[in-house]
Every structure is written in structure tokens, then in C-alpha cells.
Amino acid sequence: MKIDRHGQAKILTPEEIKALFSPEFSNVRDRALYGVMLYTACRVREAVQLRKRDVYDLKGNVRPEITFRKGTTKGKLATRAVPVIEDLRIRLEEYEPRKKNPFLFPGKPNSTRQDIFLHSDSAQLLLRKACKRIGIEGVSSHSFRRTALTEMSNAGVPLRVIQKISGHRTLDELYKYLEVKEEQVRAAVSHLTECRNY
Image 1 (cartoon, rainbow, N blue to C red):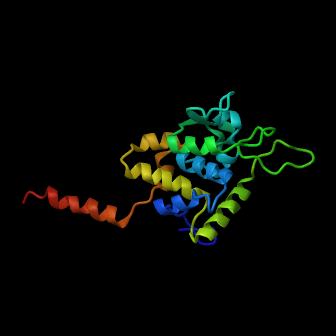
Image 2: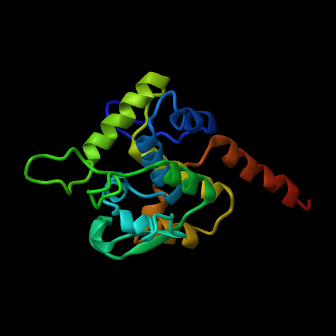
Image 3: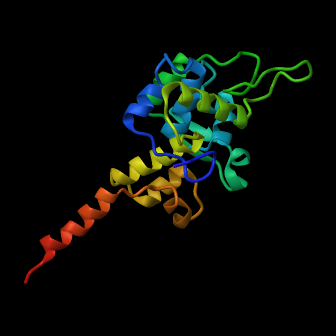
């Protein structure tokens, strides 16, 4: 768990996710941002740099996939597309980004530039404030990514598929994100009694 921004980001429980997506603690834009990070397992920098056309078609409908452009991904290695599941579609349909700004999550316009995106530090601050109101500790924007990747792994999704979604270059990099609980270790070891033939 993260303490004062040190350590690994907390894996969110279903109750914590529900609270973060509650209108009581987060506005429509923040819920859309959290949804993008959770349901695509992307990094906060990738989420805030999304352009509206990476998410919506010309008629304003949510596309079947969100495109993360090569230039906005860590290492700038490859463009990746992640399918939009129904929960994310609902969040994106509720959200209406500013019309004149090309970015999905616009930053504050200034006198010289109208086309800026929400800074990742600002997104982190919004999340910290929401977590403080809820009373959750150890959460960062990476909590969404770690939660998504761990949940997929726990559900038995093959690691190569998870790697394709996450954009990690190697499986070694992906392993660092996956949380293994003590009860999982105990359950694995308990299978040894089933294998005994003596």
C-alpha cells in the first residue's frame, strides 16, 4: 500500500470502487476518468491525453474500442486498442467533454491555449481528494491499473492477453502489478494434499 506516495498502489475493493463512482464523492468527469483507467487498465497519463475522437465517433457515439496512441503510451512503443465494456460505455455516455477542446479530459483553458488536457498531477489530486472524503488510504491513479490487471489475473485470463491490454513490454514488467494474496498461496499449497498418492 502507498504511504505518502511511497510503495505500491492499493488494490481497490469492490466497495471502494463503488464509493469512488458514487455521485456523492465524484462528478461526472471524474467518474468517466476513473472508468477509463479502471476498465482499460491504462495509466493516468494515457487517460488524460485521450482525444475525443479516440473514444467517440463523428456522431458522438462511444466507439467499440478506445485507442491509446503510440505517442501517449509509456515508452511510445505501440498504439493499442482496448474494447469498451458496458460499464465504461455508460460512464462515457453520461460525460460530455468541452466542445471546443479536442481532448477527452480538458485542462483549464488559458488566454493563449484552449486545446490543453487535464494534467496528470491534477487528476491525481482530484483522486486524492475523493479518497480523503471517502476515507480510503493508499490509493493512487495506479490503483485502477493494478486492480484491473489483478482482477483479470485472478479470473484466469491468460497473462499474454492481460499484457496486450496493459501494454507492458514483458511479462516480468506485468508480474510487478499483480497482487498475490496469502489465501491464494494457501489454496495453491493445499492442492498438494490432493496430489498425494502415498
